[in-house]
Amino acid sequence: MKKLLICMIALTLITVGLSSCIFNSSSSPLSVQKVEGEKAANIDSSNTEKILALFEEGEWVEATPNCVYDFVFNYNGDMYRYHSECGTFYSLTDKQSLELGETSQAEVNDILESLFN
Image (tube, rainbow, N blue to C red; front, side, top):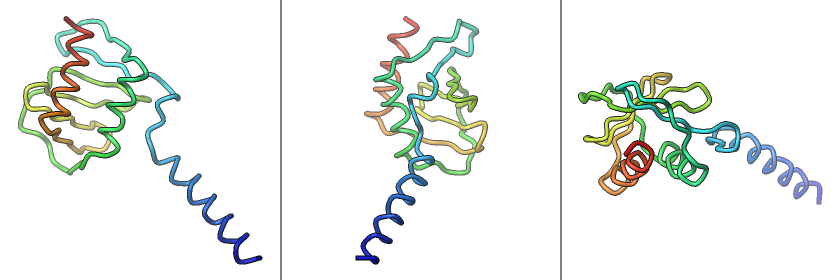
């Protein structure tokens, strides 16, 4: 019985610890601004969850992309540059990039189009 209790406590502590590593969409809104200087727009909670899931599930690599960004995302003070044509995010905080697949790129671009067109 003691071993089971210790295992349950350990599992709870691990779960709590890991949850702090995951993006928490309720802590602050995700905003985005066109580089051309348009006013920043807050992204609704549903689309914030979609984009944060891409951030969490994607494979970030330590590389600077070879494309020019046209949007800047801000989440909890962390800045992410995004180039809509090549579908690449670049984290200014971590100096890592994330290249989206075609489907994810289209989804992000649709969100941006709904905000800025």
